[in-house]
Length: 258
Image (cartoon, helix red, strand yellow):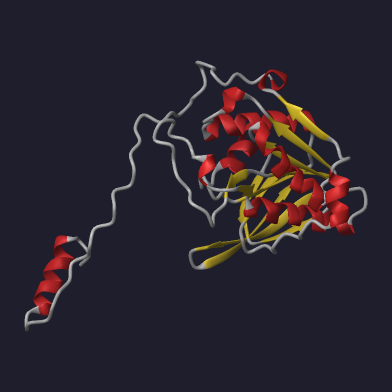
């Protein structure tokens, strides 16, 4: 079985995260860049299955600038057999539609039985990319899984919803996304870090994938305005002088909270 895991380099969630007011894009220099934790958990799902299932190949796939190669290579150090990175200057500021198109094209080229992704990245937080990729590939999807079971011909899991837990399953090939309910990822050890240097690492361009980032017939979204979030204003303080209840009720009514 060939499992491809979608991973992404993101600004460290424990550092400052800012948008560039000039470009409208994330200011990557504002904090350290790391492999997204939810992507690491997705990789752990694949590696855990590979550990107990001989013949399983795990590949990490990312669409990222060339500077992210070291971050993507962490997936190899964790245990993936190979990596594929799509690098192209035309992808700077790509929206989710273009990103899904590019990843789907890379998956078709690489080949897969199962694609595993996180439910949403910690930078864009779109939460719909796995479904978009599955739609383009015309394969079933099972998203937001809190538990995953993989077999030779299918994948199943549980998804939480309001007031219920759903059992979902899909035949292979398929795309799934997982939540933070899945276990933490393993840490790369010294042996894995050294082995990662010799593992296959393929880079692809848009030309090789036959994807046009500026296709006039494709739907694309662009940023048309951007401003900093205004500073937080002081809240309303009510001192009880015998009419606190009435003033509180008025406040709730005025703010449509009652």
